[in-house]
Image (tube, rainbow, N blue to C red):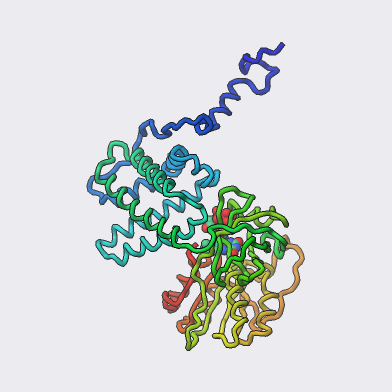
Amino acid sequence: MVDSSSGPDNADDPFGRSEVEDLVRDIDLDPFLGRRVDPLAEPLAHPVPVGTGTPPLLALRDLLADPRFPDLFARALRAADPDFRELFPRDATGVLAEFVRAMTWALETTEASRGDTAATDEVVEFARHLGADHRKLELAPRHHQRFGEALAHTLRHLAGRGWDDRLATTLDTTYRVLSTALQQGEAAGHGPARVGATVVEVLRPTRDGGGVRLISDVMIDYHPGQYLSVLTPYSPGVWRRLSPSIPANPAGQIEFHVRDVPGGALSGSLVRGVGAGDRWVLARPLGLLEVDRTEPFRDVLMVAGGTGIAPLRCLLMDMMRHGFNPRVHLFYGARFPGDLYDLPTLVDLAATAPWLTIQPVSEEDTDPWWAGPRQGLPRTLHRRQTGTLVEAVTRWGSWADRQVLVAGSPDMIRATVRGMVAAGTPRENISFDRP
Ligand SMILES: Cc1cc2nc3c(=O)[nH]c(=O)nc-3n(C[C@H](O)[C@H](O)[C@H](O)COP(=O)(O)OP(=O)(O)OC[C@H]3O[C@@H](n4cnc5c(N)ncnc54)[C@H](O)[C@@H]3O)c2cc1C
């Protein structure tokens, strides 16, 4: 007879009690038992030193920068409200890193403003914009309050005895301003915060890229060039931004281009795990990429890296509806020639758009053997150039008279904007959506 109370010494029981105990210890049972336990009750052995001469905004920034912050804050949030378990992905590291980055910028900008309201207005405007995006989360005022309490609790815990009224008041005021602006942004949006959509077709143009076609339950009236936040069944709680590659239409058809970003949480599943019939959630459109059609027209330079072609192609398709357009010079780049998957569509567009010129660019001259057989690239007026996009663009000069639209990976946007400004393009002429 097996004695169920026997311990790990029982060789017949591969799941000895101590292993079960180990497993159970890792499962957070408090919410199921209805207990509210303070996960930060134990003081830290090594709190973050808070210099008395450090301005309070910068002292708060230093507390946020402590490597223990994300884990402690995630625990405090989970204890503060059970909803936060659903609102954040299982691995909240990425979201919290973004929060730290945004808060650091807000605290440093406010500190450096020294009463300059233009600078603090920029912080408030940023929070409003973020709030517009947060609308998809359908937060209640209670969530903002509990989030603020968990934040204060975590920073107080990190500072230990260094926490004082000065820090508490500064955090309270800063959080109040930011959370009010966030809630204003959430309230300002029109239309439904979320719309369901069904995947109807999946395309596989390259080894690591795909196209996903959906029909939304209700038409989403996005402007060409805007992006939508999407929530998919492949990574619960993980929202990512994707840019439609075709203009909005009454049938609710939407197409996204997706690329597998190595190490990313979602994009691998978007390329390989998606199938017809899957249900996605789409949030309201955001983003500032647009062609200024104020007359007299300023000609346009578009610079697209990889899937960055999607919003720019959407703008081009929209321009096709107009009889008269500014001239557009499009640089379309990728690592290998065969990765320029959208070139056939672009060449088709250019065939009936005399105002559009396409310049393909690839970093490597030939495709690697492992990329498999590929069709040759369609003929374009300009031959493909070899190099990075920023090299190819700045080789032609400063483009100072153009409105410049840039879309692509965060590294590509950074390199292109820096390189173009160095080559003489006025920074204010360049538009892109912040990664
Ligand atoms: C305004 C905007 C529009 C976007 N539109 C699209 C789109 O149309 N199609 C699309 O596939 N992606 C698009 N993205 C990127 C997308 O939101 C995701 O970041 C991307 O799919 C990777 O998701 P992930 O969860 O796998 O990795 P994440 O956890 O989001 O990112 C992992 C790392 O990869 C970096 N990264 C993000 N995107 C790229 C990229 N394209 N190339 C190289 N590194 C990258 C991130 O900065 C991060 O360091 C857009 C992003 C923004 C800000």
